[in-house]
Image (tube, rainbow, N blue to C red; front, top):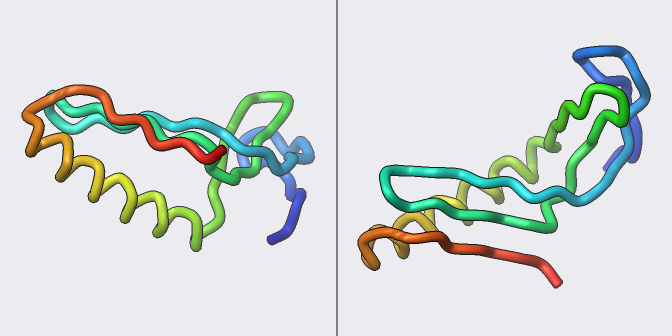
Amino acid sequence: MKRTRLCSDCGTLTGFREVTEEYERGEVRIRISGIPAMVCPKCGSISFPAKITGKIAKIAEAMFSLGEERNKGVITVSQE
């Protein structure tokens, strides 16, 4: 995975780091941490590699299904 690239919003050199993202569907909210992303230090823009985006979608869908079974709440997935 390439560790740097230019930000598509402001042109500043971005850097690789892990981020936390939250997603919401109805009354279910999930939080996934430890996601590898390219982050711009100037404007804060975040982008994910394509292979990571697919993995996030699969994890989020599984967690939403679990949350819907529980009716509502917050589910946190973290990498330690």
